[in-house]
Length: 183
Image (tube, helix red, strand yellow):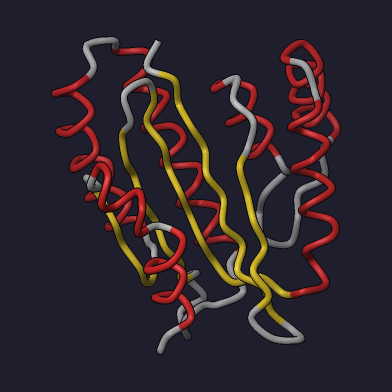
């Protein structure tokens, strides 16, 4: 069985049974699918949330998460677009976006260190880090300056929930959950 599907069955099954999902997708993520996801999520979020700033933040996080998969997944097609899993859901007090994608094992320590560092920072320090990265950040070979993860945690005020599942000696499956409070 596909390891991505095992992930969905084991990690997400409780949430799927409890609440259902407005959006669940596995595969190549590109601009056209991003537009589709945001329109589907907009319809769902708009029904349950009258606060425009919360709705905008949910869409911002969706865009950032999908961009992270398209740019940083180590499982991609011939066109260079990353593959992954993308989930948008809702709980009583928050919305959540869960992504999953393959990354090379040698990238895990650096990414885990970055996530731990961000989770430990206060909002004021995240704001300073974001400004510094905007001014002095180096652009990576994939076109990012490391702003996405800083920006999401800074704007949501919520810690990242993440896990690295070892697939084999060379690859891990990176799962990231970002929550957006409804208030």
